[in-house]
Length: 185
View 1 (cartoon, rainbow, N blue to C red):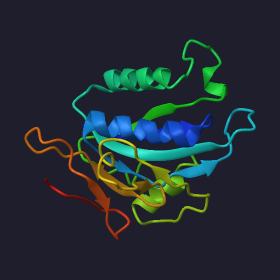
View 2: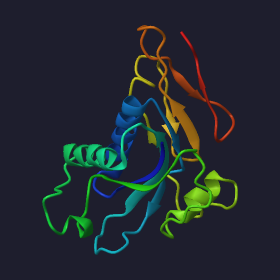
View 3: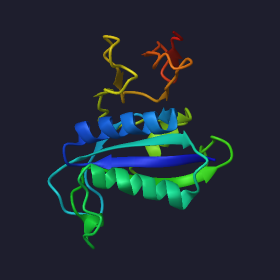
View 4: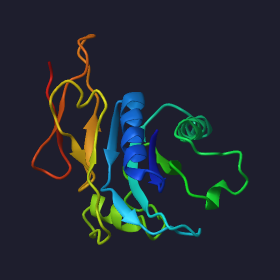
């Protein structure tokens, strides 16, 4: 099953979003990522802006099990899910499942208004006017290869590749906004 999900963070957001993406790629081996944007908080009072993005993963996990995995990741990043007001408090990490489908096509899915431009950009039907933010990957995708993996300025697909226990192949963003080249070792 393919899942369309969102990430939001307004406490040390660059660190937490980058780390969460690293953890997602390590866990699922592949993800499609939208641009990363800076937005004002919605439905809460805070002086901290959010970083938000969309991503698609493929997983055999049932929706409830996947959501629990996301909650575990949020808690590991410092979110207090036991607080009954956690939905209106600042947060280091918030990951939501927005939709699921047997195919990775979410062009017709309705999302919150602040995320809609990300989906439109992804499918070539609109533009993002919010401030985009570049993030660095620190996972095995970039480690040990002297690469500066900047993501977030346009949609990309990221893939973790391993060749028979030889470790992780480096990932290089190519000139196209939606393409990644994985160099096989």
